[in-house]
Length: 261
Image 1 (spheres, rainbow, N blue to C red):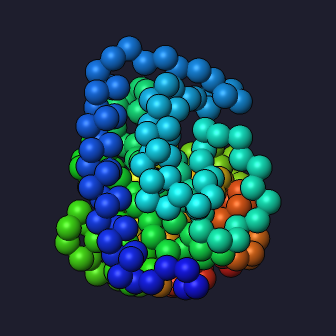
Image 2: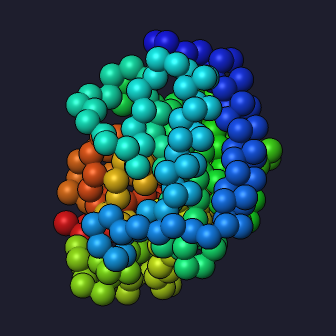
Image 3: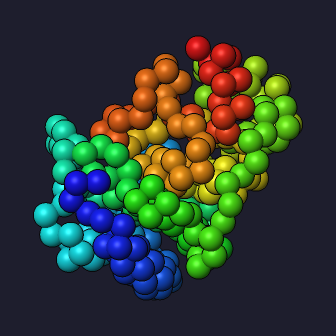
């Protein structure tokens, strides 16, 4: 790290955790009111005033912590052409359809990168009050305030897998063959919740078409545990690039990549 040392990152982590606890109450207050829901690209791609309002709330807080850092956020016009320097990556409400229709299984996600490499990541399962945070910058992952251990390096046949529902139905990248090798597929509709399940060892992997704000935080946390994260075409993760992203245990990752290519 060229610009930030570990002690500073530990202090920064504590401040972001404190903010996210307050942000949860901010979201609850908004949820208690009538939701204005708009479509973005189609009827399955929604955005609410909570997405926009919470993004502004997060950006205001993070800008005070690192005023010179770039910001890549879902509900903004993103025209960044490089990842040099410090950059926040923000998903204010990951799983907006779940948020609107189910009021659960959605997450707030924040990540801090430097020169395209992850330093810190935050995935907050708002309704369950479960916050996974940490990253390579501090060398640890916490579940709320408790340090957690890496998940077991299970093989594809030994656990469940998180898959994109539409991609599974259409057998994109031979997803149906992947599912047959596992103990079964689960479809949640939130990348953040899926990453939490992989990080906690509840499933051996997750694969879907993702934007940078969908995977940035999860990638940061997965790096601490030695989990594999990459695009299914074999390219390494680029925090500015969307694509079909796979996160899995080392054993499962190798097996899945032999199927999806």
